[in-house]
Image 1 (cartoon, rainbow, N blue to C red):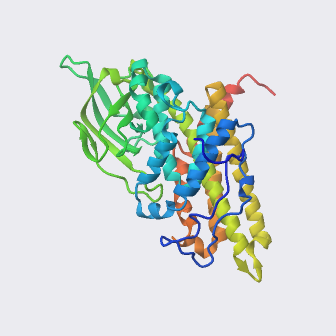
Image 2: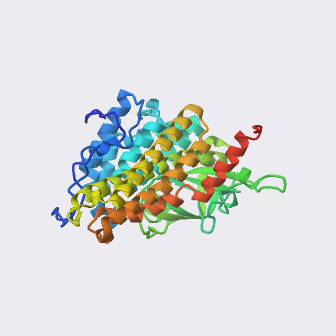
Image 3: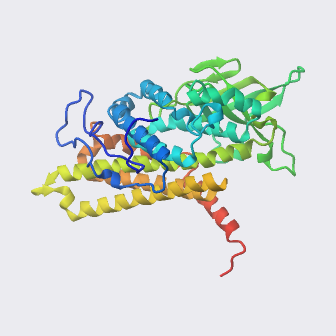
Length: 442
């Protein structure tokens, strides 16, 4: 990542690609060519190193050149972005946080989150392709055995091995401790487990060849909390759909309102045989804690996605508002529109600041559930509101598939539920606040 010029900010300016053009590249009536050159004034990140600024400049240039021009067309076709993923591999993005000793770049969660913000500004689905891979690499780095790290991480750094992350089940919702998928030791003398059950909402379930799967192992007794009987398994498989290895079937892609391009699937396990050395960390009963650690950094990622989508929605709105005329002047000069832009920009800034704080807290303190929960909650809610504000500014054109805001309007709702709903975030925030302030009396 040595190309590109550094601006010292976490966001850049648009060259006009991907904005208001159809698949034939022609300009649509009334559609802005791009965003203002000074749009980078929003969402600045202070205190970055020269290396971080260089990485972000490179990712920003890639988004402008390779993602924005094709995002809407690929999204409407629900097409997997093969060429974009190849470009991310070449940039080293799949190994961004993997330690240098395993062939990665060894960067911080903050650097990763800012890259996700940049990518999501181009097309949120691409960030999803990277994120589940990143969570599995994080789990291996922090919880895997030395053998597991040495076996997987070097190939994950290059993108040869691509990760997916699986906790949810049909009807489970956010009650992770109620998982019913089971893993029992084989009775044939082999040191293996047999996994049975159905998993749901697996991002990259088809394209990944390594899936971290949470199952119930030792039955929880009356005096043992259910979450202490959960174990994470490292399941290797062939990419694709159908029976991808004996005992494991990926039925196909789940059709979704938004978040298209990336494959979201079920996993059906029926006597799936997994060797004991593929228990994450080598010890059963630790899966809940391991997965929750992964979800914590995943929430920072979702917050970063919300920041990127919101920033793009604001850019589109302020560009359109300066070019669309009513009553003899640009609509940006009407107070109602100017006020809406002011509100949107403030929300973009606030969400970005809280996201950066959460990433830095996790990097420096190890535990970041309070900050991550706040960042995910605020960024997702503000993203929805900023996108809707942009949609309203576009008026009737916002309802047209020819305009980029239509895509963003369908993408934003996923952030409200990904990595835990707003209600779950409030529960986490409330519990942590009570822990912190338990001994503080007014």
